[in-house]
Amino acid sequence: MAECLFCKIVNGELSSDIVYDDETVIAFKDINPQAPHHILIIPKKHIASVSEVSAEDEPLLGHLCGVAARLAEKIGVAEAGYRLVVNSGPHGGQAVAHLHVHLLAGRQLTWPPG
Ligand code: AMP
Ligand code: ZN
Image 1: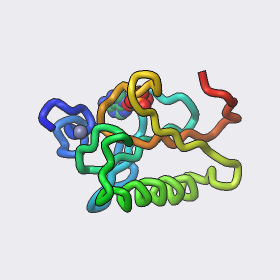
Image 2 (image 1 turned 60 degrees about the horizontal axis):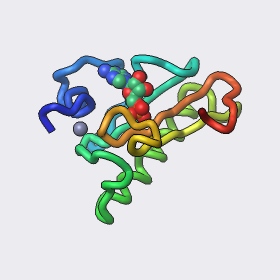
Image 3 (image 1 turned 90 degrees about the vertical axis):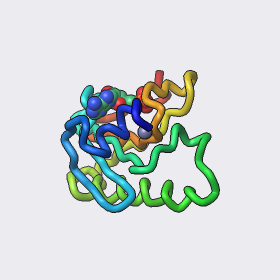
Image 4 (image 1 turned 90 degrees about the horizontal axis):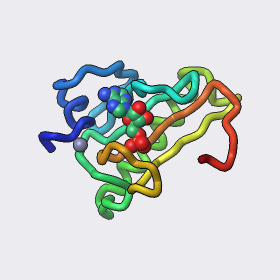
């Protein structure tokens, strides 16, 4: 997707602070962090939102969660806790139409979200 912001990060057209990279997934620091740790974990393949996930992509979603959990371990927040968020569509507050998992950590997060 030529105009997709996160596809541009995947193909290196746009720089980002990448903290994890494998064959199917990358993770990078959110440009506007909402917590002391705020990382976005995304599939390299363009999938617009969780609503667009096909059956064949479902294992990839599991991989996104696995990567998130291992990153939480690596940055030392697994024990204190963290939050994974996937916004979908306008009411979900999704601003970038490329599926991404937010990893938020490093402070007490409140519930419910706004
Ligand atoms: P969402 O509202 O769930 O679509 O989240 C999009 C997230 O992408 C927001 O937290 C933004 O701060 C973040 N973001 C937007 N552009 C960039 C960028 N160039 N590099 C890193 N994070 C970004
Ligand atoms: Zn994309």
